[in-house]
Amino acid sequence: MHNRSMIKCHLSAQMDKNRRNARNSEGTTFGSITKDDLFSLKPTYPNSRQLKACDAIVSKYNDMIFINSNENQQLSQLRDWLLPMLMNGQVTVYDQSVQAK
Image (cartoon, rainbow, N blue to C red; front, side):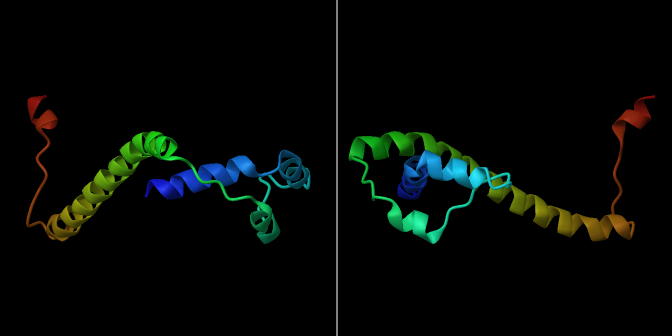
């Protein structure tokens, strides 16, 4: 997983600044990368220290994404189970703040 992050970082860093500026001056908000741009890049091979440093940063975010994705899936399942019962009156929502007034 961390290799993809490093590759993306290095591809972005190697793009020639003049080429990006030329694309950005064509009236688009963001410049584009063409096939020729990609083929003109020299491959970069990070050493193990760089990979570990990148992984230390990126893996935390990947873990958070995984946890949030699982939580979203559980919440969607709970919603899909509860919503029909709420709509046909099988369950009701008790609002404690209304009772206290």
